[in-house]
Image (cartoon, rainbow, N blue to C red; front, side):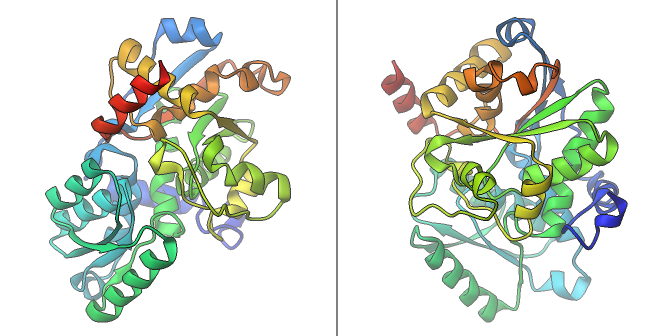
Length: 331
């Protein structure tokens, strides 16, 4: 894997460098276990609690690494991104800690709790229409006007390296893990985790969890090329992005499988996080538990030897209004 710096946008060296860079700023998040969930799954589950990360999600790792990687002249002009969720808040917080401006292009209809986080952390919200083309157009205009640096939510080597620090920590905390289940959207998180984990432990399996209403990664793996969807429909608002040209090669080569879940399965996993683990996890964060409890995972002979499974609970920024509506509709 050391020879892959040219092949992939990140590698174990850049991930270790990122960890040293961000260590003073991030939380080393705990790992939770539950005998009840172990019995339900028939395996030993280890939950990496990224909802306890600053900003309430794993995104702060990548955003912090990207901001700290800027030279002083770049940093002084600030950073810009387009995001409807946790990356927006994470970049706002990372910029605030360094005393530089953050311009956040937010599509209309973004979850209120996540927009509130951006404002709380001092990000300057600029609204766009909900389409990706509108987001990108508005972000390009802000870049031109401010001279700031674009920090993409996932298709950036600095972001991938920062997210990979999760695997460094998890495999230090629980050495016996033989598989890690990771939510997948644009692929920044799973790319970093896969690059780090497979460098440290080549035999480890990396399994992606994805909503059926936004299953572009599953379709891409089957097709052998990036497939984008014209429309997504899922309660997991953080898992609606498409893979990027930097994340796709890692997903193509190092992700062993993609498990797709119905929204009702994701909602049930959220409920279990509340009732059994006693933690608040957003839909995108709970999908890994949903995957491990699903029939498609439990009945697949390929995973029979995976006894110790790490699950990344990626975030805890729950839109409570949508949550209660989902609970009611799932009954």
